[in-house]
Amino acid sequence: MSFCCPLCCHSSLQVTEEVREHLKTPIFDNWQWEEAEMLVLLQVMYTDLDFMTAFHIELDVLQNFLFEVYCHYNNIPFHNFKHCFCVTQMMYGLIWLTDLRNKLSRIDLLIMLTSALCHDLDHPGYNNVYQINAQTDLALRYNDISPLENHHCAVAFGILSKPECNILKNLTCDQYKHIRGGMIKCILATDMARHNEILNKFKVMQPVFDFTNKDHKEVLMKIMVKVSDISNEARPMAVAEPWLDCLLQEFFNQSDSEKLKGLPVTPFMDRDKVSKPSSQTNFIRFVLLPLFTELTKLFPCPRSLDKGSNREQWLNELQKYEDALNSGVFRKSEEKGSQNKCSICPCSKIISLEFRLINLEISMSTDVCTLKI
Ligand SMILES: [Zn+2]
Image (cartoon, rainbow, N blue to C red; front, top):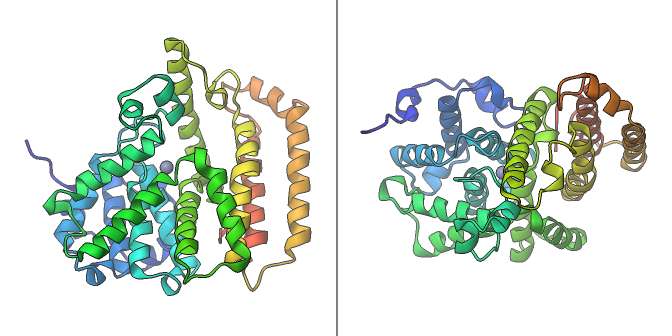
């Protein structure tokens, strides 16, 4: 039985100039698009970055590749094809926004975009800790070392090993080796257990960062994929919030399974302990903010405001918000509503705070609704 590739049916779909331009911005709203349309938009990204001509990629091979990627994402709440699209689109937006086209080679851009596209292939919806604790096939195969990320990467190169999907087939051996090495590094870097290690490396390089230095470039590429992977909260609220619900649903599925199987329960996934606001505050404070702060040092905005005082102001607001959380103000309002639904929606508040920070710190625009990194 053969399946029709949605790209074949939609490849004639007209992507207007307006959509093409909008696709280059980090405010793009994935919820407005069907998955088949997302496949066409992915094709636009490869085309508009000139990958087709630079790497002699045939259109039908790219379409087969994208369709295979689509087929290898599972129908799970968060780590699905829509997440793949969002991460790839954020990477695409960042490439344009930070003018990386003029700072990195075309081959490095291909590595970053394709790594983003493949970074969660065949994700089962249960994280590495679960894989290891449950001694799953993946944990056994990869000796407990980033089992998921190793798997995502292996699936990616499995797809590329099919001649009809191999977008790298017209490259030289050296180019192929470079891309394979780069993609493996970028995809393995998305293991959050390695977050601090990679961020610290980037911090050390920051004052002397050199775009011609191979090691520096390599860390930057990892950071860009990581930023894209966890950038939902940096999108407009209407885009970001449904994603948080998807993530919590996947987390709760895991903790339910852990309880059922008698495995250690991952605290931040426990439906009895986690609330939307608390998960957001910690994530933004300890993961997102430090990462974005480092990135803005490398891509400063000439029009940015007085960073020091604004940043302080923002952190004060975050502190006030946390105090309110701890005093139970939000908890009480949550209890009134249905489970995990906060009636006054503090998660929206924190996301909007984050938003403002991004605008203050990274702003390239005075429009508060426009995220700029
Ligand atoms: Zn991801």
